[in-house]
Amino acid sequence: MKAALALAAALAAACLSAPVSAQKSYGPGVSDTEIKIGNTMPYSGPASPLSITGRVISAYFDEINEKGGVGGRKLNLISLDDAFSPPKTMEAARRLVEGDGVAFIFATMGTAPSSAIAKYLNSNKVPQIFLISSASKWNDPANMPWSIALPWAPNYTSEAAIDVAYARARNPNARFAVLYQNDDAGKEYLRGVKEALGADADKAIAMASSFEVADPTVDSQVLTLANTKADVFMIYSVTPRACAQAIRKAHEVGWQPTRFLASGCANKATVMAPAGLEAGKGVLSLGALKPFVEAPKDDPAMTAYIDFMKKRLPNADINNVAGLYGYTVAEALVALLKQCKDNLTRENIMAQAANLKNVPLSLLMPGITLNTTPQDFRPIKDGYMLQFDGNDWVIASELLKGT
Image (cartoon, rainbow, N blue to C red; front, side, top):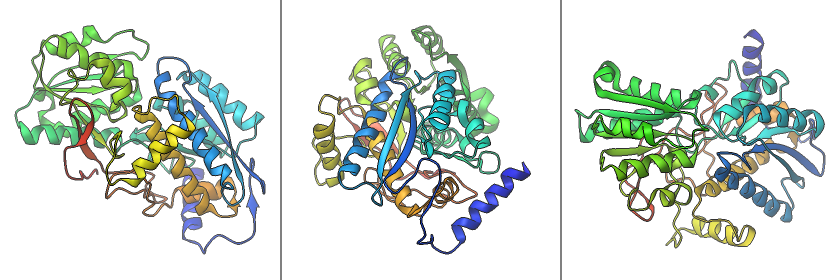
């Protein structure tokens, strides 16, 4: 603990010090011509629909490299398949750090895979940059000073609290049914629901039911929850299959509660289309990224993204917003590396990640920028409620502030 606190203090000092020296300073994986970046993605397994994130990141770096790279250095992404399996993530991380000599690990997909390698990376002082998880555990600079996430939306606890507040504003006496993935992330979302309901939790939660990522179906859980006739159905998963099945089954049995979908599942291509567009009509989800629109009007950033996808990944499903996220997290890393200038040691990369000040990204919604401090590793704290209108996700609220 003392060592971690000392490192956190050092990061703070680095952030508050004078501008980065003009002297070049490199750590492992960095040279005058290259920055080696390690990544794992579920290119196979139950979460494989999310792997488009990795392909978009790679394509984005290709475009940056064709323009000269960052500070004249090409971004060399080494991306390995972990099948969304924590033991495979651990194996891949060791290979990337000890074999390939990457400067840092970037954008690992999911709470469980990222958690599996966090201790290893922190013990070896290897930055774990912009991992893909909304778990609040990543805001822990004292104990995990080398790990920082970049979620789709505010962390799971904040997301749950915003969802509950939104539902109760419309029905103060609402009863809640919760379907959640049986892992740290799912349990955190459920805890966030209970904390938001406070003293009313035992009475207001009609039932909570869990499932395993590998389960072939969640139909039985949804049927049990539907029998409660709860007014609100909250669905938490990172796997598109479970989210789609939950929406479809509730619709099939005629259960029509207000439905909240985890931010990571607000995806037309992988969730709403398989569930049935009509079945998903009216579903709500919190988000920080602009909802994808195939024919944007007066939105040069979305037009640029669509042009990028058509050019770089013409066979990809452009409706899969996991691609839109990949574009955004890649853009965030480029902004961070530019902020590091010529001081590309692991220590300074982490220090700069802990000192983001109103960093704009092209596909974040209005009023949302990246902000961190050495004491607060949450780049995104706020979001908008989105609603699926039967064809697209549309903004359904003003900016909602997280805590």
